[in-house]
Image (cartoon, rainbow, N blue to C red):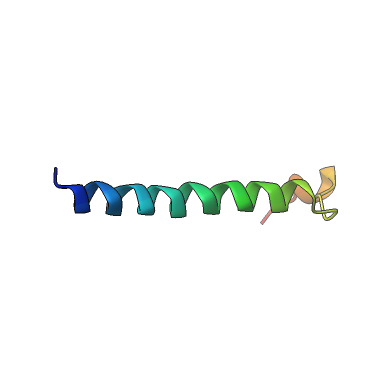
Length: 43
């Protein structure tokens, strides 16, 4: 692989994994956790 392809791959991986980490951190500090009734409701 060329240097440019490796750089582009690393940038894409940082964006994807960084977004996942930010989403998980946002969920962790969120106070809107579902109750047991909300989690098991029938749709």
